[in-house]
Length: 380
Image (cartoon, rainbow, N blue to C red):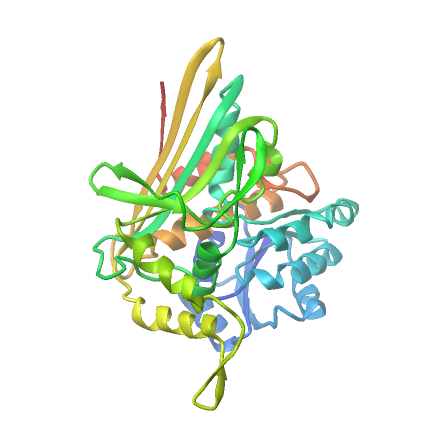
């Protein structure tokens, strides 16, 4: 089987690293608007069966020409291109997963379900970390109960040694971070979908060996879960984990307009505040210090007439400056696993579907373990 990676950024190169080692994969390809970058990543993370090429992800016909030669693909480009890539994948009869991150874009893709079914392919959006892997964990946990009362998802990518004032470093795109901090958040409350404000409802939590942390609402993490479990789970939410005080310091920057896309005149030039904020974040928070990813899902409900709680927990640490970051591993590896599952015929359903509906945890979770992403499950 052959797997294509679209985008040669941090997540794309990690997806390639994973795909070349997957069982039964006979060829891989990595494509980017920057052909030199794609070539470099082929050399660093590919093998003798890896090819590279230049690709403009906004050119639907060009994407089709690439994907027609592959069994499945992982889109690691900015989410705005994913609807066009989805159309190209359907035309090419190539399975597709992406890293997603925007609810409106995902809904646009899910609306192509009938076309994907007719083409005999499976298209699965939002297959990174959160949105992503946590949805498969949620599905696994949900199946352990007769009735689920609450599902609380807490996830964060953090520097192992925080630097003030924000105690944060860029571990994925600045555009994605701002989107999470700015867009509305969808939860389930009383079994029904409800929208809450981002960077609100700050709570405190702890992880063994790490200490005190905070978590607050951010956009996108619940992905399709509120729709899938609407009326089935009383309360479901998602919060991002940060070091204490981060929300209090970062939120005012957005409230005064630094996430706005409307251009302002500055010294005779029009400047987009959001573009400026992205540039400042990338320049001043790209420390490349060792990072870690924290994941905790707490599920409460009933089984066989008794109260039951299941907790899923991951603490993944980058081992050295030379190794893949924890965020690369926990975001790109799950997407690559699902792309491999699709190509290997381990996902039976076709169409554009949420991963919690079509990805079998019994196949997915052992693949995490093979990659040393250590998941601890506690039941009480």
